[in-house]
Amino acid sequence: MKKIFFITALAALLGTAAVSAQSFEAIEEQVDNAVHELGALTPGQMQVLIEPVTIEGTETTSRLSALLYSNIKSYAINRSNNKFRVIEKSRAIPQGLIEGVYAEYGDNIRVTLTLHQNTPVQKVLGSTSFSIPTADLQKAKIAWLPENIPTVTAVVEQNKTIEAAAAQALTNAAPASATAPQDTLKIDAWLDHEDAVYAGGEEMKITLAANKDCYFKVYYVDAGYNMILLYPNRRNKDNQLKANKERTIPESPMHFSIEAPFGQESVIIYASDKPFDIEEASAAQISGSAGSTTASIDGASLTRKITLTETPEQNTRNRTSANRQLVEQTLYYTTNPPLFAEDTLTIQKPEDMKETLKQIEDEAKKDGATFSGNDKEGKLTVNGLELIYTIQGGVMSIRVRYPLEKNYTAMAAPSVASRGAGSGYAFTMNKPANMGAAIQKARTEIEKKKGTFTGNESGGEFRVSALGAKLSGKYAVGGNITVTIEEKPGFLGEKTIESQVKQTFGAF
Image 1 (tube, rainbow, N blue to C red):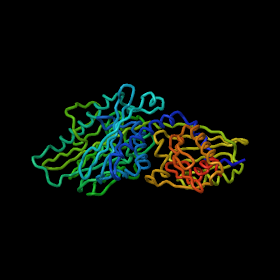
Image 2: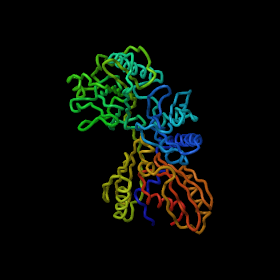
Image 3: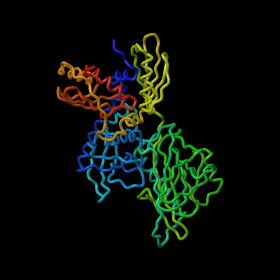
Image 4: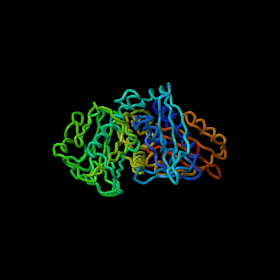
């Protein structure tokens, strides 16, 4: 009897994963096609930044935004035929942007992806759209609105309210001057989650950068629309920002953890070329409750009841007075309660448990995972995915628990996403005596697991889903079979993949 290794046994879950993973499959397929269409719009490789996917006409994100963003990024990196080189958010201006928005249309969510060119000339290269049935999203527990805002109309109005309040505070603090200095102060700020979506228990960080020495204040607007001074505070009083030097906050010993209530939140950043007048009482508010505190900036306060006076056209604003330059930027993000899915698998206990545990430990180290276990029980953790096993008699029970927010790219990193487009890894296996029968066996096994297989006795491609993440590759037949893996879940090691592919083809 052939040995069945613990992690390899996850392959048995490919056709029996939770309904959420199957729902993600259809969305991922549409995103894959859309990214290919955008890639066809540029003749060569383009350096691109992928923007958060937002509700049309707003800066608001959701669970759906996170899922779409992660797939857009992954496919742009791994399956765009080298058309895109994805970069991280920074002050540098990318060659292009991939922007995503969505809106409700009847019983569907209509998603539109647009490719913008920034250099040498700013222009829209083109866009593509696809629809997702709202019934599928509901079934998979994928919300397309923040938890604290019931309708798209309410989202739009709430964004207007927050932006108007921030702009009014800016006006009150620095009435416009007749002439602005040539060296106008500019502030850039971005979140550590590029999709602008956080789950409960995660921590948020904000990076700031300015074109000249300045001082800054950061206000936090929670899901209940209450405002509090986040920075500076009693423990972090230094609010100076050096020119062209990035600074990430909060700094030790402080941490900004995401907790209930959940929904759309925002941070409002103000920067000034002169020090702010911050009273100690105001700076100490960070130790209080965000839900019960209202903070002010130079006399203008933000509470839930704000009179809407005007709608600013941009998220970054600048005011100059005779005494100071003051700039403001608002960042929106959405927080969600942590959402997990679970699958279970029962297999026969491996014959050589000692050797099996050694392989698990080796693959865990290779994939950046943590593992602890013995011949009775154990746990493997990688990128938020948990595999817990128990052994009774000759039976091994495996419980797999994974976060739906990170269903694709978090599991793929670092094993897939860090490789870049088309780099993958390859291995060879012996060519079976009856190649036709081997091809048919592989096709049957993969299609049984709701995957796709296209090929013949010369070569082909295969693709199958593993807990919402993709395992895909191609094969070429010569004296041996050469298999190239292009995408794989981060929780499966290369040796494990190789073993499973060989079993699928019947080649040992």
